Length: 124
Image 1: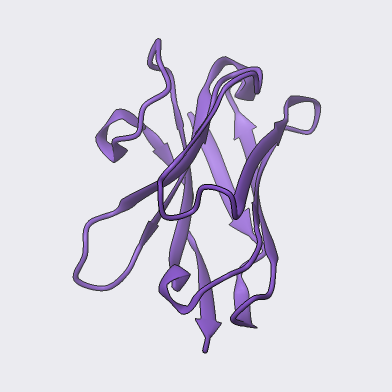
Image 2: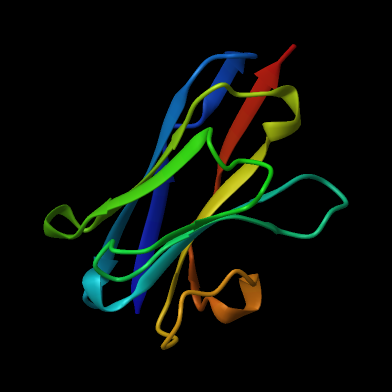
């Protein structure tokens, strides 16, 4: 089992920054790829960013590329999502997830452990 706990969400104005954290416990964190997804009511969970096991490779959705940065500190069993230049359309519940697939996935069904989510609200 892997337990994931997100933190760092909140209410900010457009243009502001937030850093989300994802604290992992249980099975070895650095054996797993990590992703961030987000979801708004009535919509499917959307891929935001992903990072490989040791952090060598990162991937982003087009909507956040250049504004968000995913990273991880395996020594602390923690992943991060730095979000800059936030826009109202970034408003969502943000989830971190881990995957034991042999590749870094961008589809939510490829991830088998999830956190409970943290709300990010960006006002205009």
